Length: 429
Image 1 (tube, rainbow, N blue to C red):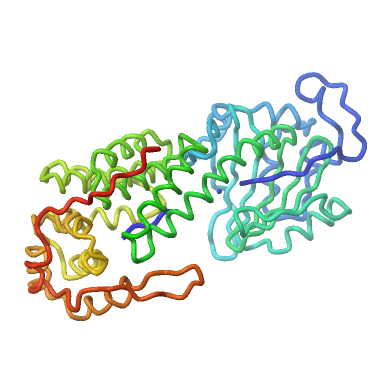
Image 2 (image 1 turned 180 degrees about the vertical axis):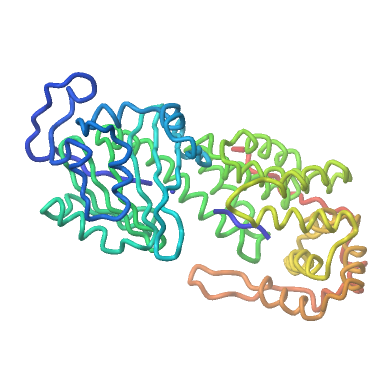
């Protein structure tokens, strides 16, 4: 019902020249390259003029002017700029984003983004959307040479990097947007080193999420738990790992551990993680019979202003069901989860979804779902096909033993109101 939802690298080595300026401040330790003034930036790239506009009228050397900035100075100088959503994988990293007047071919505004590590600016980027597919070629033309390094980041972003003194010029193409960036080389390399651990945690967490969203789920509880715990060990502040553990323990039947992980997830700087934590804490409250608290938490998750709308959609669905205003589609979505749990003979997980919808037994939930007009036979057959097959190492599904029929009128003999799982979570929690 819910989905989960980044690493930058840099090249090393010295650029041509390597002489330092005689000026004071940051420039004193800054190796000279092609770009020394705002006007030195390539004018053949759409959007770069906005970086030029950030300079001063005298067009002086921009080293001190740009790398001496802090989040506070940027926000003060640009009233329309806003802090972006935080990322737990970038400790003490702040992003400030500002839309500019230019638009791309689809009428979307371009964006300038500043990134700060420990309060020091290390990269400024112009997001060109899809309007600059020839961006690498234009930078290559400007630099009069091929890129010093090429890399594939996040599995899809093609990044070309040119070293110019102590400046890094980056051209990124990932299908959704094409970005031109200037980076302070030493600071960027420090950022990349710190980011490496985050990427390891991210990859491990994604593997756990992929299995968590697959069926059958019950046989994989232990393996999924290990993925999320490993991710949290690499980056203890990684909120996504904690909130995924909260969800896993809730479905597994270990509410105390689920509450503990959701409390840790609430400490995340990521607003999406906080919203997910509210959603799962609401489900924990509903399972415990505290429906007023569950409604409050669902409403909080629904109201969260985050990019991922799946949490708000799921929270709104459960909130309608708790209030007795659930639609046929609401019942269908929850019934699919209940039916899959029954195919896997995971009685507790089925009861979690029923109680989260405001029903104290799966039987009562099934009766209400039929009354709402769902096609139980169709959904049961779907559950048999989707959830009654065990993935194998060769990728071919293997059929597992399942009941013949899951229709609600057959449930009383299969489903007690409470059936806690007996397998305890890992001691390494």
